[in-house]
Image 1 (cartoon, rainbow, N blue to C red):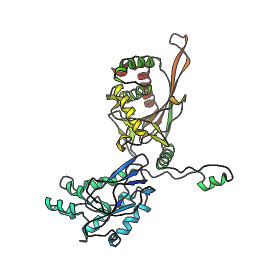
Image 2 (image 1 turned 90 degrees about the vertical axis):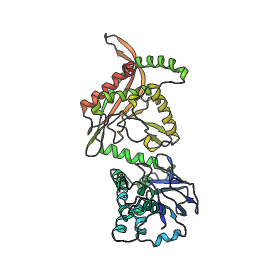
Image 3 (image 1 turned 30 degrees about the horizontal axis):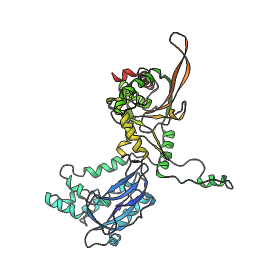
Image 4 (image 1 turned 135 degrees about the vertical axis):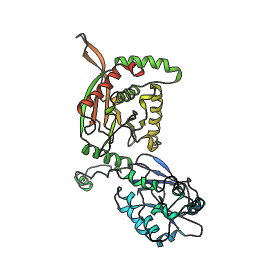
Length: 431
């Protein structure tokens, strides 16, 4: 039967995307795993693969189309002897196509598999690809006992191949993974038309929001409104770190490695999360997940927005390894070439605006993280030494924004103290 190919959700925050480029044309024969299109998500441009074999019968969405909602039909896949127009005559085809466009993002995963159950229960036509039917026959499997994960509950190759080991487990995982996705925050303040009327007669340029900016606006509005923030501030003396960094860079020069202050900050945070394990946690709605590894996210500014790539197991890596990995992640972030797993996860984030001359600032916690460290620039300031004498030191101001649901005041203070101790005694981080 003709099968609709739906706009996929290629990232957890994706609600719509741009169909940047078709890699196939009508009439092309494709197999499972073949590339169909390039899709721009709210974060990156990603390739979309076919999940089954067939013929591209009709392309419904032209390349370059923006704002295509997730689960919107973008093409029709057919088999030999079929026509793409036949899909209009299939039972339940119309509601299945219409539901994703009108339903809220959290409801669409529940609606997608629904047609599969009636088909098997009432003895009606069972939707399965020819390849899935052949594999099922070879394995002696009953297709009526397999829940399809394809469009409108269609059984595809992957469903049959995993049926013996994990019957119906794969499709059930999709709603569970998608259910916690928060809905876009409700708009607040004056409407767009009201604002435009306020500036009638004034010269301005209207800038259209892309997917990334819309996502940033929605997520950070939600975070600021729903996460109970509190803030902890400390000044850090950097003189010992700067001296130690200079010595290391001189020794690492033959290897082409140059450590930045930010590399030390990443390592300091990672080690502090190990020293204060109760703070190495995330908010999970009705529970707290306490992590064992130190996975540290670092904000990277790009044109039109930002990424927060995650350095996994940062406490286990050397400074030179962290430096190389961070440079690679930052470069690919600016090129929008990061895969979703490279900017998802982590329990704590770092946002460093010191290189822009910012002395101090307050950052917004990025859920589900429990905290974020806002780092200012290092500046020379008069300080009172331990002997009471006035001296000059390079001082960096940091502010730790904390989710009070996960970390209380004393626990947050202990975490920040551990970070400060690591940075003021940098050789300890190598022990």
